[in-house]
Length: 507
Ligand SMILES: Cc1cc2nc3c(=O)[nH]c(=O)nc-3n(C[C@H](O)[C@H](O)[C@H](O)COP(=O)(O)OP(=O)(O)OC[C@H]3O[C@@H](n4cnc5c(N)ncnc54)[C@H](O)[C@@H]3O)c2cc1C
Ligand code: SF4
Image 1 (cartoon, rainbow, N blue to C red):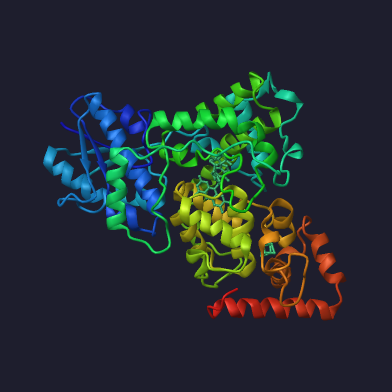
Image 2 (cartoon, protein in one colour; image 1 turned 90 degrees about the vertical axis):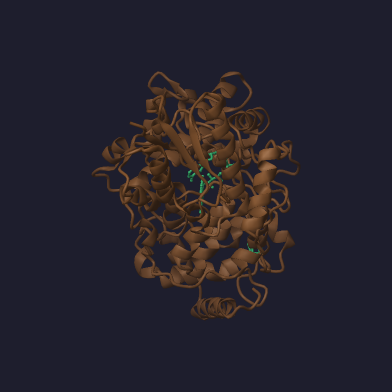
């Protein structure tokens, strides 16, 4: 009996569970469907990246002699959804069951469960920590601190280990990292690839079917095959990794790429595996090509943060994206789509996002995320924005980062305190403030940096929740020491700013 093997757009590896189950006679089903391409207004470069990578992967499977039923987006028979395509292909091939690798999103897991064709969902074992192990680790803990989880992952993988001790004597070298932006860059950013014929065809399709006023279609350079992704990884390891730790939090005007890897779209789509990436970084350290502070910091992002975030998504369950612990309900300002704001830091991060479908972690967390949290924006709208605009965004990884880490909407599952800061942090870690119409040193008045006003506004309105947090007590004491008139001015000016923003005024 013919079986269908479903391969989703973010499962593009021979090693994915459903493909390991492949038997001669099975038919691999891959489909470009509108339901997936439009459930949020995805960045066209994200759609183009996935469609092109899918088409290349299908070619690779065919070259191995595997039967692939591939549905193009503009195929007149296209059923429009993954479940619909499974049913159509099952009827065409006489199949009575499908094998899938469990999707990274509850929405799609449910759609496969509800499909009239029986779909067996195998665990997605491309991750280092199986969900059952994560749940066992988390069970009974008062706080799910990433750092403890990360140490377990180091022991489990043996990465940067010297027997049962951390290599170099420390688990974490962040103390040596996180410097302000350098005067000059020695790394020109990620390896870029000229679109081949397949990508050019996909770009034309995407331009036609997903026209957009706010996103840029131009200058597509992502890797779309495993070979290209490996070359991009090697380029970063050879030229960027050495300074990753030093400058991982720095931000510079008009320099979109500092010393980051830009591999998250490849990792999340399956073109690269997390362990091979970490082993390549470890080998650079062993070969004397990168210092331990850089390599440890980089490996921590992958076996620590990435695995932890995924564990949280599946542990917390399908209601996670609806959480709103701080009861924030302001509409997402239009400038998140247009970049039309006077706040130079926000404008830089949004402009870059709209052109490249990329921003680095601190831009996402401490600029656009920080602003949304301070301003009290509805976390679900914030979540949908992040899910749409980044090429690496899938709900399993985006939601805990946004709902949890960035917006504190999960009430403290991911972070024990909210990531909020005044303009001072952005000033320290970037050159943005020097280009801004607002003055970062001004706390009140018409030129006061909005982050300064909103920072106190946030703390004041959430006093009941945070004042007793031991990590925030000092901040409240500083606020309380300010004279009452000054506090009233800060709050009134913050309210006026939010009012202008809500009424569509340029802020
Ligand atoms: C609000 C917010 C939203 C985010 N949304 C996403 C998202 O949708 N998809 C996504 O892959 N990452 C997301 N991240 C995490 C992180 O910003 C990106 O993984 C990173 O910027 C990708 O760029 P890079 O490859 O240059 O990363 P590098 O800085 O070079 O780091 C290397 C790798 O570490 C991993 N990594 C680092 N931090 C995290 C993290 N917090 N969670 C998961 N993986 C991590 C990524 O795979 C990344 O490729 C988000 C972070 C925040 C604060
Ligand atoms: S002054 Fe404030 S708004 Fe302007 S760039 Fe600096 S932090 Fe951003």
